[in-house]
Image (tube, rainbow, N blue to C red; front, side, top):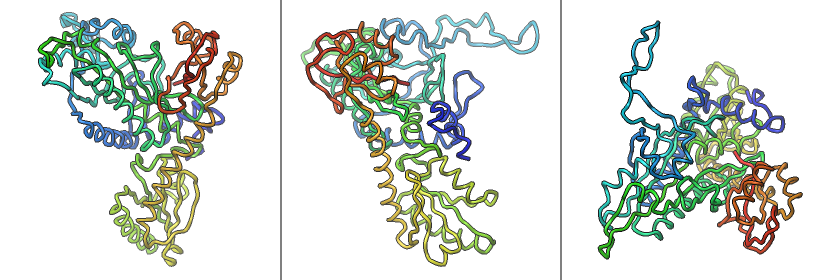
Length: 492
C-alpha cells in the first residue's frame, strides 16, 4: 500500500497529494476547488479543535457564531480590508431557482434578485464589528473575547487539498478592548497559544514573529505569525494573530464611554488557524511510508494486529488483545484491534504505517506462549519484543518518547536549514536549496517586492522568539543600513 505513494525525493508535491488521498484524509469534491474531509482526516482535525478550544477557554474566550453571509456594503467600509479580499469573494445575487422555460433543468429566477448582494464569508471582521456595535456602550462591556469555529470561502485560482482550497474550516477569534495596550497583549498572547500548540502537540517547531507591513492581514496595524518549515525547505504560515487598532471600530462606529466619561473607539484583534494545519502535519513529519502522526494528535495511538493460522489461535489472541486494550485505555490511550480476517498481517502493517499510527502491537502464537508482544514504533520503524505485563505504562512512556523524538527530528532539520546570508549572489544561490535565509533588509516595501519578483522569496517574519538577530548590517539587496535580520523563504 505504501508503494502507491511517490517518494519525496522523486516528486515532493506528488508525494503530498498521494499521501492525502491514500491515507484517507481527504479527496477532491465535485465542487471546484473544494474538498471532502474523510472520517480519518476529520478525526485529526477534531483533536486539533478539542485541544485549541480548551486553550481558548482557559484564556477567557467564549464561542459564538455569526452569519455565513455578509452584506456587500459592509466590506467596503474598511478600504484595506476590502482590497485584500475583493478578488477572492464569492457573491450571492439571487435567492431562488425556477424551472428552465427553454428545456430541462433549472435556471436563476430573474425576479428573485437580492436588493443587496451578499458575500459568502471570506473572514468575519465586518459582520462581527457590525454586531459588536450593539454590544458595547461602556467600558464595563469590555473586553469582548469571542471565538468562532466556522467555514469560510476564498475563491482561490490554484487549489491544493488542505493547503489552499476555495472552502476551508477554521477558527477565528475576534476581541474588543478598552485600550491599545490590552489589544496588543491579546494579539501576543494568542500567537503564543498557537506556538505552544504547534510545538507541544503538532511536534512542529515554529518561528514567531511580526509580518512585514507588506505581508500584514488586510486592515491590520500589526500581524504576528508562526512560521514552520516543511521538509522541502519551504515555509508554511501556520497561524496568525492581528492587532487591528481602531480601524474596524471606526468603520462600524463602535464607541464606548471610558472611565473618564469620554467617548472612545474600541481596540480590536483577530486571530485564526485553519485546516491548513493538516497540511503542515503531513509535510513536517511524513515519510516515504506515509504519515507520521504525533501521538497527541493521532486518532488511533495504538493498533493491535493478531497473527494466527487457526480459529483457535485467533480466538485466544483476540481475547488477550481485548484484555490489553482495556489496560491501555485505562491509561488514556486510543486503541484499535484490527481483527479483519480479509487481509493478511503484512497488508495491515502497511496500511497502518501509511496512516501514521504511532505504535503497532502484533501478537502471534509464540508471543502467547512467551507472554510477550511485538512493539513497532512508527517514527523510527524499530521493532522490539516486550512483556505483556505492565504494557500500559510501557506504552505511555513510548508515546511520550515518540512525541519528543518527532519534534526533535523536525527541530534538527529546521535548524540545519536556517542560514545567514550577507550578499545578493549568495541569496540567489541559497534560496534554490530551500530553507530559511536570515538576511538584513532595509525596511522598504520596494526592496521586499523586488526580492520577491526576482526569487519568489518573501519575508516570512521578523523573528521575536527564535532565530532573532538584532545586529547592525547592510541590506542583502540594496546595501542600505539595517538593524536586524529577517526571515526570507519561499512558501506555500
